[in-house]
Structures are given as structure tokens and as C-alpha cells.
Image (cartoon, rainbow, N blue to C red; front, side, top):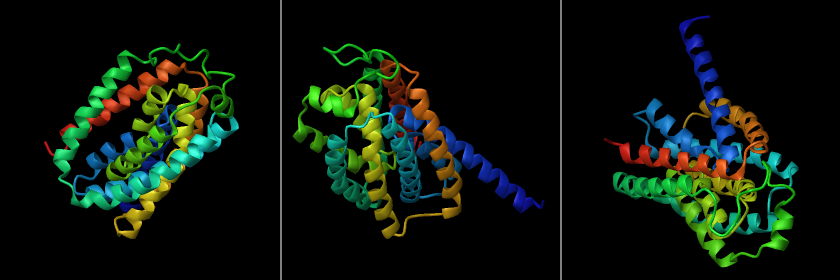
Length: 274
């Protein structure tokens, strides 16, 4: 095997492993994994434009979300009514976010988002259970599924739509998915059980990530398809692992995992360009 072939093989294997890790952790907390992938791509490719990083990350998030949604559907954790409505609400925001990326003062926006994410991460880590509601009982919060939750717990549909619009915008703008905002918003503001929020968020991410990816492709910002293939294969496999692990983890630990992810994204945003 010559040097070029060896390099290609190692790169393919490295992207495959990265995809598995992104898929597993992203599915576990319902965030899509973009919060891991974007900083890694930025570190591995310092000369790559933010538009191309966001486009690649969103494409990977789509495959992650699609695989994770299939797993969560088998577990009957998805609230389809809320999922469809909120997913459609993310579309205008996703389009606007993808179109806006090239026109923003990136450093200023990174600082603002970084500070917000660090504050949110700290709040979620130290207060993992929403006020007035007990923590999830049992690893899988059984027997409450999406359909049961819909009948048992009303929520503000208008507020959910407004949140989803913002999520769609931020998702396409940064390429980080959107679950890092959607999951805590659904759990804390709308009152969804954590496991229903993570599963429904993944369902929503399928539409959000696909919309943002298509806009980036239309703008000619998508990069190497050969790089996408091992990442996509990895996240599809990793998403199944993450969904399985989620059955073994209590709800407040999922929230704390999300808190760590929020803080990591905040730090990465704050240090970009330093």
C-alpha cells in the first residue's frame, strides 16, 4: 500500500470512529452531535470556511438524527404531533440561518452564543430536574411514551413554535444541530419528560438538518462528499448505540450530559479566533 492509500485508509477510519462517537453521544442527549463535530472539524481544518464546516456538520447531523429517530420510534418515545409541528416551525429559521452565515460578524456572534451556552450549561448541570417535577423514574421513564404524554400533559403550542423557529435559525447558522437548545427548552419550558424531549428533538432534527444542508448545497458551500461517507456511516451506527444506552441512564444524568455539551460548545465558540 502506497503512502496516499495509507493516508486515505487512516483518514477514513478516523472519520468512521469520529462518526460513531458523535452519533452515540448526540443521540443519547438528543442534540444531534453537531456540538462535537463542529469544533473537531475546525481544529482539523483550520483553513476551512465556517460555511463549509456548518454544511458538513449539518449533513452528518441529518444522518445521526435519522438513525436515532428510527431507534426512538421503536421505543415509542416520540411525541409525533409536537414533533411534526415543531419540525415545520424550524424550516423558516433553518433557511434564514443558512443564508445568514456568510454575512454575520462571526467573532461577535460566537462570543454572545458562547456566554449564553455556558450560563445554560451551568444552570442545567446544577439543577438537572425542572422545578415542580420529580426526576424521571427509572432509566427509560417508563411507561410514559409520546402519545401518553400528549394526552396527560398540555403545553403551549405557540411557545413551542416560537422556540422551534429560533432553534432552526441557530442550527443552520452554526451547524450544531439544535437539540442543545430544543431539549432543555422542551423539558424546562414546555414540561416534556426528558426522555420524550430527547426523542422528539431527534425527530425534529431530521427536518431541520436536512433543510439547512440543502440550503448550504444550493449556495455551493458543501465540501468533500468522500469525507461525509465514513462520518455518515459512523453516526448511523453510533446513534443506535446512543439510543440503547439512553435506556440505561436516568433522566437527570441525560440533562447533566447535555449541560457538559453546552459548556463545551460555549468554550469552543469563545475561543474561536483567539
